[in-house]
Image (cartoon, rainbow, N blue to C red; front, side):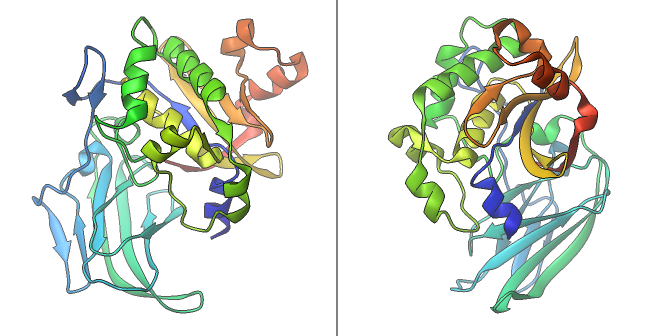
Length: 296
């Protein structure tokens, strides 16, 4: 529960490069949809797990009955980290498989009282990804977008002249920090299980850090830039940041992050446009200072 609340007050994102088949809506924009294909399904009277597209880095899960109780999903991957999600009844949710190849345990949980949950269904599946970047090009529960999403259309417009993935990162970053304001009222009342609605965020032109992260992620993924939302530790502080994968540089830690007050473009890759101090730049550039715990 604590982790979900932190998502509402800090940032999350990261980027990579890759190309997979998708739905084109402009010369550059491609949407890689998440769907319940029905080819491989596990089901009981309470839940349905569609794992037809695990090679593309996700599963679809839903609770079959209408209920006023809280529904949770847990995804435990090869590294034994447990990712917890809040679900809506009778609606498929796309849950990413972000720990690479191996066995994943997918569980559906129903609240019975207080903080106690009962297992409605649980399945273990074998996953072999088509690409290590597959989970980071598609929509999922945290970053829910499609071709008609307003920020997706905006991304196509502002990155029209971009030639590289890093130039797209800069364009999207500058657009978001200039366009959106921090929603202090929402930050004070945000509840566990909050999920960004990208069209509403676009209309209001404001949001909490989770909204900022989801907006940037959707914009970049729709432009073929695989984007990872990362949560973990910097020192002893629970924090969030963006890692960028460049064909020339490899993984770049801390390219875009939220420092508790504002968004920063801080990685050494962007040193020519950053006003960061040398000491901070040195810290950000050292991947050992970042210990990732969750990625989305």
